[in-house]
Image (tube, rainbow, N blue to C red; front, side):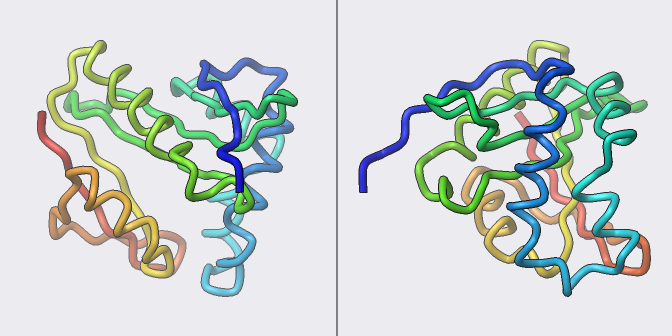
Length: 159
C-alpha cells in the first residue's frame, strides 16, 4: 500500500466539521468502552469543537484531497506545562506516520510557547495510544482522575 501524502497545518474554523468526522471515525471502535458522557467529551460536538478551536492550538493533517485525516490540540496549562488533547487519525490512514507528525507539530508549538513539560491524559481502552505515547517518551505520572465515570491516566514528557 502506498504511503498517503499529507500536510500538517494549524486548524481554522472551516476545519471544524472535518475534525468532528475524524474524531468520530478514530474513536468509533472504542464507543462501547466509554461512558456516554466520556465519549461525547472525546468526539466533541459542533459547540465544543468551536470552544476547542478558540481555547487551544489545533493542528490537522490533511490528505492530498484536503480531507482532515488527523488532528491534535495543545495548550499551555495554568502551571505552565503544555497539555495535549484530542489526538486522532482516521483509521484507514493509521500506520503512516501521521500521528507522529501531528505529535511533533504540537510538541514544537508547546516548546515555542515556553513549555519544558507536556502532559496528556488517556483512558484504559486506548492501549494502542498508550504504546504510541510511551514510544515517544511519555511516561505514566501515576495520577489517575475520574473522566465521566472512567479512569483517566496522565502521561508526562520532560524536555
